[in-house]
Image (cartoon, rainbow, N blue to C red; front, side, top):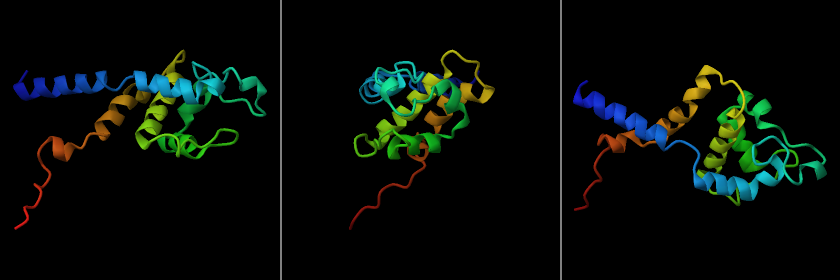
Length: 142
């Protein structure tokens, strides 16, 4: 394997390792979502039974939704679910999007493309131009 191949492989493993569930995701989900959606995203939270509409089981619904649809539901609310845009920063909304995806995958067979979704999301969030030194240097003022 060439040096560039080794570096690329190492970078991919580092990205994959950093793309999983993390403590911040778990904390925000526990504070904002678990009471309705349940700890495992099954729609069985402590107050779910008292709601007019049952929260969805992520395993049954999330697979059919795009990232944009899920992000919009979190940010703007949907049905009985409140909007979290004023309470959560955009990065936290993205964390909740990934958390919903993680929870939806627990206990079910994955479609082939779902196995790579987190890696693709991480890859697309890196400012590659800056990381590779391809962006223009800031202009110097006279």
